[in-house]
Image 1: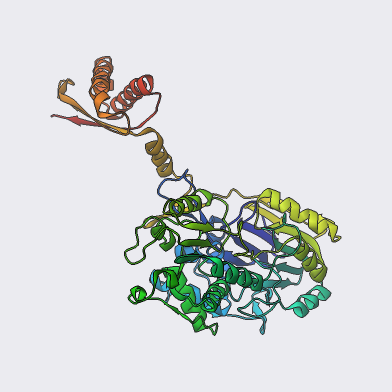
Image 2: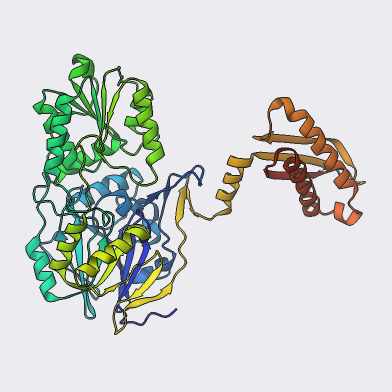
Length: 551
């Protein structure tokens, strides 16, 4: 594959044909920039893994030509991978004041703060970097200071939305800059790379002010102590909860590291969040029913505050029958089971659970169909490139673009190398993309044999066999067999006896040359153990064989 110097290229590394792990590359004049570097969450098919990272192998080879990483906002699916893989890129990072403030705290926790070159940007100043002219544009989302980027080159302008919605009363931060959007549209836009999360949702997305009204009503009508969770970075929602609680004469406590980190960042950049306590030393001074606790863990995270409260694992916060648990958030796809477990734990304790399906306690941060149509009419691009969604979301987004008069839509997958310059914009190549996984102190590919072994252990158990052969190639001492997850102890002796007998027959059937080769002996014994175990239990365990020799 050869990319010409003046090709204007868009290459998504994550976030296309999926929701999460957003990471995108743009090329022009032999230079690259990256927009976002996020994570997604692993499922039960990857034991011991919490998050997934985008595949950046393509740009690592060209990192001397990577001029900068531009973050649209501070959500984990857009910047959560920075702390894990920035060291492989070592490019300066650009973001809004809140985004950079939040990132500083994450980098400090992992000892990288002094190493990363950070730049705070706003729509008041255009950034010229290499052949790219980048105009930040203020929109709104469920986090302070989100930015879209108008990326201009001599071959055309691309408008990259990031996550966004139109909220004319956002409670935190500024309103969308409609005038700047109009001006960008008038100058001419080659392509719009746009959020597709709510492309199947009719109408427009409601304002954060509506969520505040719903929370005020719900808190007023709730009984007992109120436990309420939301996305930690949704500072506007935290403020709404605090204001609604104060109006109902409640005492508010904030619980959760991510929540505290977001509030600290908001206070630092001029979005004060006040009226609550972050220490629980005074909680017993107040009546149980007079307290509202804002807790982290809206997605059912195993070690989060909301989960620990639900399962009576918090050392300072107790739950009583008649209390209320409010989930002021949506369910991120893939987290439904974990969230439902927390709901069930609360319900078993006699706690009423309220979600956005019951009351207006949450509004989305993404645009509905009518919002997307409005943006297309403002930007007027020649090409639509839907991202941030499953194939179904992307197709619906493309249909919306067609309604507005956009004749060409390109629906990418991760790794789709899209040439936008020239007479026939299209996908010119498909790069193989494999996500990565932070596993302790190492970064592994998601298809690593390590995870294959863990899945085998999870579903089929393990067997270890130790065999000692003497100089005459005879078995010395009893064969040692150890199993985990194969059979109950009552049946273990019968199975071990069968396995040992079959191993002995296998070894005695080998010739001298075979018996002197450890690899052959291990292979034959492994096959023997597998055959017996499959015959008795219909499973294929992970098997280790160790051959020892007495000289």
